[in-house]
Image (cartoon, rainbow, N blue to C red; front, top):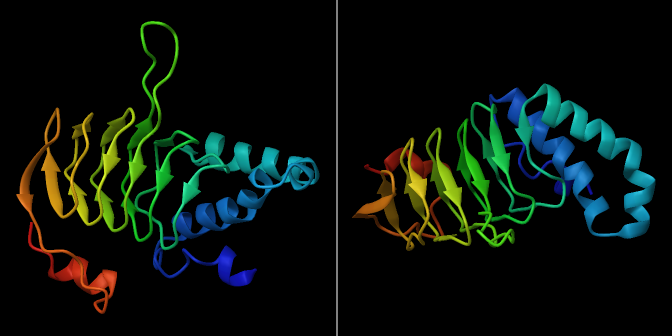
Length: 183
């Protein structure tokens, strides 16, 4: 249980707000998987919503699927649709939005699926039923409305792939890879 709760702790080293938000998120997440637990957890879920969403300004619903080692950089104005799926070792900066699209007929599209080892610059918008591949970097201010393939750097509005990068080797840690990655 402790390993589950603290799975993002090292990824957010030096980032107290990121550590707190992810610890609170991981504690709330089991309530979305079990209806009985959801009822018992209601007071905590209300606390989570008030503290994380209202006071810390981070909309990360407890039912969102988030892989381990999620880094929340400069945690402010992050909005994630609850049906979004986020892979492992992802790094999201402030003012980022991941959501669905309201269609003309009033229905909504699916939500984004984010692969492993994805880094988002500040003010990135990923909307609609979009798949962002593994080992992807998306530049600040980009608007993603189409799939981004694995091992890519994408920028712009709308975002376009500008470079293909080498895949992350399994034996190299994510932190070392980020330090050595050339944009």
